[in-house]
Length: 296
Image (cartoon, rainbow, N blue to C red):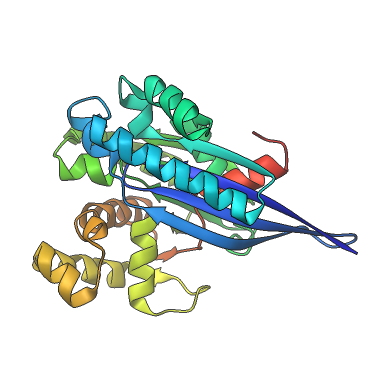
């Protein structure tokens, strides 16, 4: 006898918004399965507003209302019984963030929680990493977003340190990351990874997923530092238009992929990691699991 529950997660990031619908399959005597049913992504770059002018603009509020109304309808069609919507750094930092939350509640009937970096790191890390993490090794989990990057260090399957830094792709594109922030990240990574001889990176976020797709590797195989570095050089030598026309990147991916790759490369360099695994998970997967297990 199996039971199926339908849960949804909405991730309101700095570069895009996502709706994930998951079928949760329960069977007695078996571990619960979380199966992706649908994933919809809309390219609304809230960070562009939040990190430069400090507020979400009228135009983006309107687009957001439309996106949330669409998500609401999709959840209805999928017969979703429970959902959670989480907003990250762009909404955290926009001075009208709370006001936007109220507008969305009124116009689209979606309740949004603005979460802090620490909670974001914890939710992402709660998503299923078991197949990538063996208990005797140390892993540095790096989630690069538009406004922030979350680092979590795993050892023996447990998180032993985690931190969120205000360094993300949309910020970097707008030259809004001070050299001091890079130094802080370097110091944090080196200090926390120093006790371990062998560190492996785990990367999440839309950009590393795209790099992984381009590599045409099998899901359980990692990318090497050399490969990521050569991709970085290649992408960097192309114009924005070439990246769209020749590699087939989306317009909202073709610019942010460069600064994102730079963050992963630095994390590998500073931790001494030679490889990076790219599981197909992110904040929305973590939200579904956290809801199911009563963590949020």
